[in-house]
Image 1 (tube, helix red, strand yellow):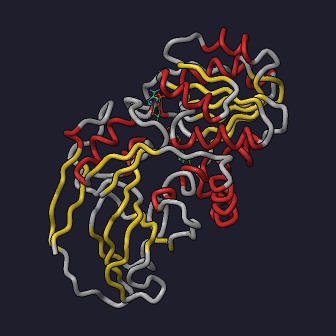
Image 2 (cartoon, rainbow, N blue to C red):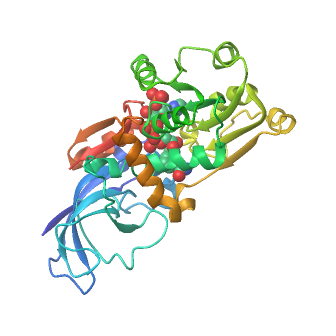
Image 3 (spheres, rainbow, N blue to C red):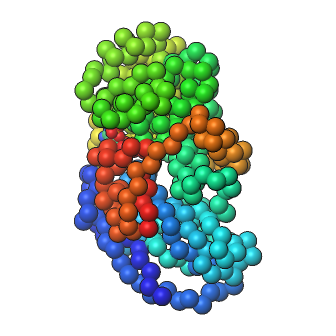
Length: 333
Ligand SMILES: NC(=O)c1ccc[n+]([C@@H]2O[C@H](COP(=O)([O-])OP(=O)(O)OC[C@H]3O[C@@H](n4cnc5c(N)ncnc54)[C@H](OP(=O)(O)O)[C@@H]3O)[C@@H](O)[C@H]2O)c1
């Protein structure tokens, strides 16, 4: 049987481009060893972390990533044929693996949660890693209280849009920053109190005008200058969840120069904490249940930018760094 995979052809240097990737075909045996399964990808997730963790991949490696896949053949009792799974097997369309041996960060095969009728793709987005990052980063690190002001960067992305809507559920005033007028309008439709195109405005002046009482919580997907100015406007005992720093993912971390407001951090006793969503793995089940409930009762709305075709994965990934996605970027095989 033929399988396709996308490998790292050249190390990333600056923004990703098509020359970093190569689509490779290979033959895979259809005869399975004991406890092996054959997976057919249906949906693939495209995430900024694939750039941030680019230095964990070697030239020739399959690009990291998760997918919703159907179990086509199985010799594993935990993964019957016909079932769907969430598989961290990278950018592959057909995969033979032994789930017992596939363990670790960015690896593993998990049974599909019961999405109660929601689309399967939501298991990669609002009810998957993206939604979980928003859920735990906001609730565990920011711990927003009703009436507080919460700022979200990359607010119209998969993670940011969910974080902002959860902050609204918790009774907060929510201000979002995003990179286009279309995104700004969508955030207002979602119920954000204010949203702004960070490319067109002065973040400092905007927060002084629209967050006169100061910022209490900041869910940060972006880092860099935006974060500097949000910190300047953050209150005593503010909380910052460092979910991502996409503005610096294409820079060399050793030479990048980002201004950082140590004085505000110290004198205002601001807590800033980075996190990886797998920290709360034992709590994922109930959290997914709560996210499903919010989506079903309409309090959290999900939007996806769907790109068609396995071979489109590299372009979809490149497009993330151009801000072309609204909501979760996803590829339909
Ligand atoms: N810690 C965790 O466990 C965890 C889990 C999931 C995701 N993350 C992180 O969360 C962040 C969001 O991930 P996501 O999958 O939801 O992606 P996303 O926000 O849906 O997409 C990325 C968005 O980032 C913005 N962007 C791109 N380059 C930028 C730049 N130079 N400066 C400012 N904004 C830029 C673009 O929106 P604009 O048009 O608004 O610029 C783009 O659409 C990422 O940093 C990701 O690494 C972390």
